[in-house]
Image 1 (cartoon, rainbow, N blue to C red):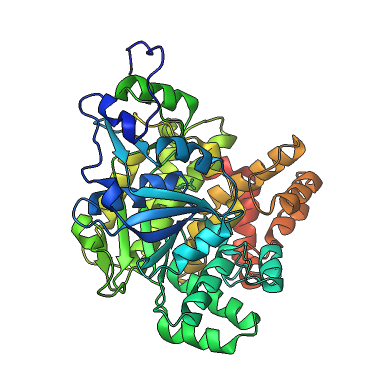
Image 2: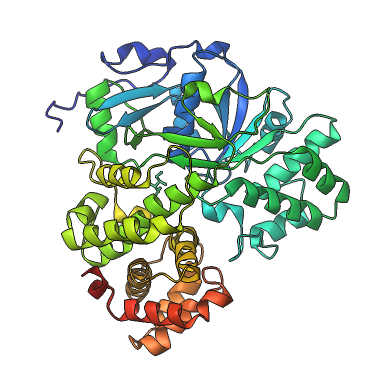
Length: 487
Ligand code: CS2
């Protein structure tokens, strides 16, 4: 707990004010002016800045080629905050030990919506080897079966005007098309979002889009030459607050208008296919593996599946943060049982991955008293997240003849949450918010009428699953009383 008084006004963080940092604040240990940009990152939000950018910050200490150009696809206001700070920002590691680190790996922020020439120049720069991205699940414009939705408005707009892309898939494909036209080697697109087989999904989406552009030569070139590694990313990164900015100002002696808070834990597992010319990620703690799927399934189903369950059930039980939901003994007990007894049997073993120890570590991370993680943040984009986090495990459990009872806690609470927000006219943070509001508003409380409206959402439930009697009756019971499932 911070007890120091707030200074009148600490200097704004920038290259010139670094010397004002209080002792103990970790500063970049390399000359930023001597670095060159080797990475273009789409979606430089809090997660990327707290996670991947920290790995590159460490790498820049030994290899100056890997500074990052952060590219905003949509205006977020971050670029405006970054300029006066010379693209520096503070990561507050809030855990058993508190640590402040000033990260210097971004040397440029660009806006895709206004500085597209500069973005194309970067994508065409032979020094740029990786194009990484954190655009969240919805940023890929996929349909209910995980394939590119050619009817998505952003994809339709890009197909009509492919050289002036707006979507992530449009940008990656046009960037690759430019490299091909210039006779260059391709960059490697690296998805860092919470989706199973994120690299494969991006690969398939880019190929489908290139084909829909009617460019067979480009489609074949991408198929033959471009690798799309899958990755698993992990670090709990709650959204920054004004309180955090004030605390950082007091504790570091510098004012940062765009800081990041996260736990100390950091993990990045990357499919080992970056080639020889790539940054040496293994040297800064990235786990390079042949098959990343086992890690992705474990993380998405155990960590994120538990998170979403805590979020919806917690919110409906009046809890506000992950810490509060974990202190709700009935809820945390049910979630732990779901993890150990229901999710583990759906996972693939991986070398060095001891699921029981992994679960115990996760539960401790959820209980981190130094970090407040709002449930409402995790509850956003449910229509995009739940299929990866919960519905996939349920489909596997059904195939294996196992119980799906506890999995329905999250879905039952989610339906109730959607209805509650709709009836209160609160717009959901979800790309399907219009559809969900209409469903929510029309619900009467009669499960026989209400539940089929949710199950008809093909973006979330396949026809096969929605038609499965066992699935329907379990979801219906959860809709009627998800709290009974906590016992
Ligand atoms: C969370 C994740 O907001 C959410 O949906 O479940 O952001 C989670 O904190 C990260 O995936 C942890 O790596």
